[in-house]
Image 1 (tube, rainbow, N blue to C red):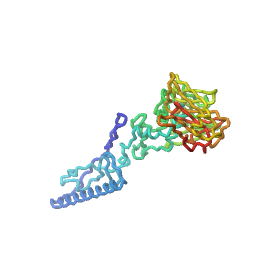
Image 2: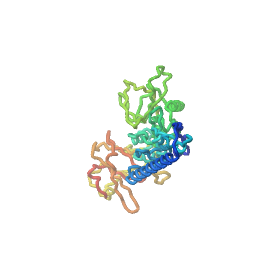
Image 3: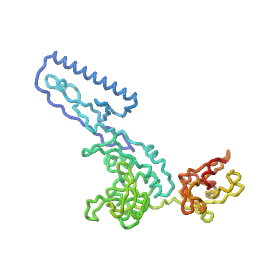
Image 4: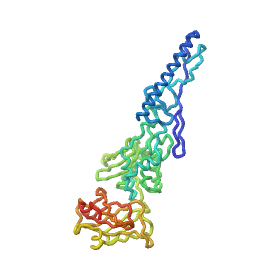
Length: 431
């Protein structure tokens, strides 16, 4: 018996497999012969059971075999989860009268018997899988950031069903969106995109585990565009048709992905295929593109400018928030013991609401106009005041971008914030 454990409060169907016994061949045996055969059969079964137990214990203690719920081991030491013992009836399974006396069901293990339906992920696993995504509050960017954390994910080869002779594996995306068997073990391009949207913090945008249904839902709220209606951009959803429909009006979406880059010739996507992968499409070849879904802007995302546009800050920020920024004086710079003549831009920034300092929710995008900044070799020093003294924190260089005379980066704790933009070699120490 396959028993899939409950997930999200639901339980999938229970499956069982078995067979019927064959008729006993004709012939009679005297009592002594039956006793000898019965004793020999029992001894063989006892020996086989003992050997299987020893093999299992050996594998467990060596770490080669990890125990699973309801798992048994076949004659080759491989885990089976059907709940049945492989058995073919022999003469010893019958009495002289032809009555089946072995008490076993005739059964041969098939591919489905080796599927562990309890091998599923938890919500904690899902959160951990997206933990490296840098969430800024800009929905298009955050969707791409989450999708990138999933590249390389494969559907399970331990938990699967067999459909038309093909193994169809469990996916976290199907389990997250709808743990019915048809979705958990079905096509998962739509479930993948919906999963990424959720963990990117996108709310209020319709979604579905079915691509065609998703197109209809987006069209109902004016978020869907047929191919050719708009120029796609990074963060858009893209829908594809199968190519079998000759009539354009009959075409329905059967697959989808997330656009992560565009150029004049086409675009690059991340898609829920096995494994999650990047794919490149050319407008010239079209690639059976049906249309696009465009996300709205995050209604909680706010943009602030200060110091005549010298610095801008954007992110998911509390309402009625004010950004105040001022340059640091020479005396303050001396207090922080930074080398003279090396500082490109130094400032103090505060987020205020009703006169009180507040902190943004999640990450904030910071952009500073520094026309004299070199294109490489820059760093940002974070300086924060604490009750027990001043701490200088070096900002990771790889998160900085320098272009068009501006330095931009992401910060996670904008409240009272002091930042120093300077060459990398001057950002190594603490004040």
